[in-house]
Length: 304
Image 1 (cartoon, helix red, strand yellow):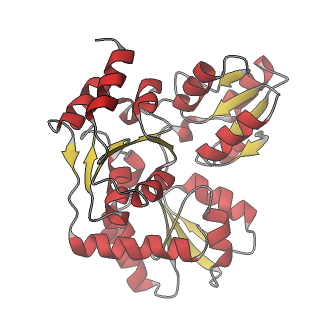
Image 2 (spheres, helix red, strand yellow; image 1 turned 180 degrees about the horizontal axis):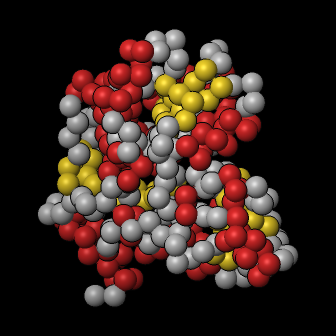
């Protein structure tokens, strides 16, 4: 069956009680089949505001867990059960627990791209779009920021009065970017603006015209008439190039900026989820979920 017919069948079968979410790094056909697309936390919030009884997440495991944390009453299905995020599991909850025992006065800020067990041990959650704002409002000078050292370094640059402690976490996709990659792309497209995600290393970010979340990158790309080089997971560029052929969008390192986990969702698999035969239902330990929810609530408290 071709993609168009599969998408039509998915939409016909899913019913009013089922909501399909798709992260912007998903393949274009999955985005076309979804009810709502966007960044991970925005998807979770959007789902919590609907009456849907069943939510199918086309993304990775931590995203489905966040949906479940914000909507514990809903049935949450991860469309591709094997899809995870390497960064989400790089820091162990035990390591954070030990740090807090030894440093009770230092708050632990955790990136949304983490599993629920780690969130449960931390004080406040952040997204790439809210990290600077939230960290700036914390009264403490010393702050542990985990897991992404590149995002944390970018926050440190924005907030020189803070002392941000960084550990060894990183996004294995965005962290591949080098200054040489960026300079080569700019040389190839000298009239283009470069928009990059803050999960990229500082040596690459120094040449960016715009640094921001996936949504911020997309918003900028669609708001300008100038050509744009997209320095984030290639799914963003793939979709924009397909949907806006009249604009000039270019990939930054298209062969390396690919998250294999984000490409695991298929239309056939999504169709089986809609039929009730596929995916994996997300079930969280109630205590872990409640503690992780506090971490997310603190993010909302600070305007995240």
